Structures are given as C-alpha cells and as structure tokens.
Figure (cartoon, helix red, strand yellow):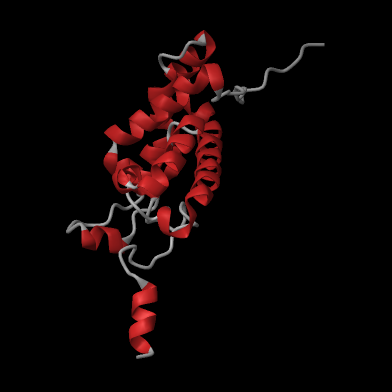
Length: 183
C-alpha cells in the first residue's frame, strides 16, 4: 500500500532563545522598520492616535498577514537552511511560532516590569536610566532580557502589554495632593 502524502505543510519547531536569539533580534528590527504594522499588531488605540495628531491604524488584513511578512524578514536569511527555504516558499508555516514568540515576549516583559513596580513601569526608558533608584534595576532587566527597552518603548502605556503601569500621570505626587485635601 502507498502512503498518501499530506498536503498540509509541517510546521517547524522554532527555537528563539540563546544561540537563536538573532531571530528575536530580526523580529524586533522588523517591528522598528514597519511602524504602521507594529501599531496595528500591538493594538493602536484611538487615544494614542488622537494624542499624536494622527489617524488610528486599522488592522485590515488580520494579524496573520503581518506574521507572514515578519516570517519572511526573520527566516529568509536564517542559519537553518530548511527555514530559509520555507520562508521563501511557504512563510505562513511560521505564523503560529511568531504569535507564540510575541506572547512569550509579553510574559517576559510583564515579569521584568514587576521589578520596576507600578510607578517605574510607566516611565520612559531614558527616565529610568537617568534615575539613581531605577538604573541598576534596568541594568539587570536588560542583561536578562535585551529586548525590554524596545518593547517598553512600544508597550509602556498600553495596558494590554504593561499590566504593572498605573494610568495615573507618573509626575503626580499623590501624597502632596492628599495633604492639601485635609488642610
């Protein structure tokens, strides 16, 4: 008997860590160079768009189409020949892996933000770097998770990605306001 070949492509198991960290580097680089798609992917809010004086980026084709474009950028020049070949002929096989990687990055980002606490997580990378209290924490974070600064630039004020951040204005001094209320 002959065995029928499956027409469904085999989804490769993709490693993103350690010796394969360059794949995450390429993912982050793609996000930097494709700002519109990045905003669509990480849910551009109407409020952000209004504050920046621009229109909201709508997700017209769905995230899968964005993942396919990312797959080409990440895997076309991969160190694994099989991945290069798949990226050229069927980049869609990588969409679930990219989606999973973004979920892992989000979880790691959350974990690192917990080290900064509620007020620190809402500050810009530059503010945190110039603050004596947070610069050592930042050094630890970026040593363990080198993509944190990039992700923080994109996700810092987005509650979907930054669940540590308080929506309150980080410059507010609640203690001073409380004292004034009771005078």
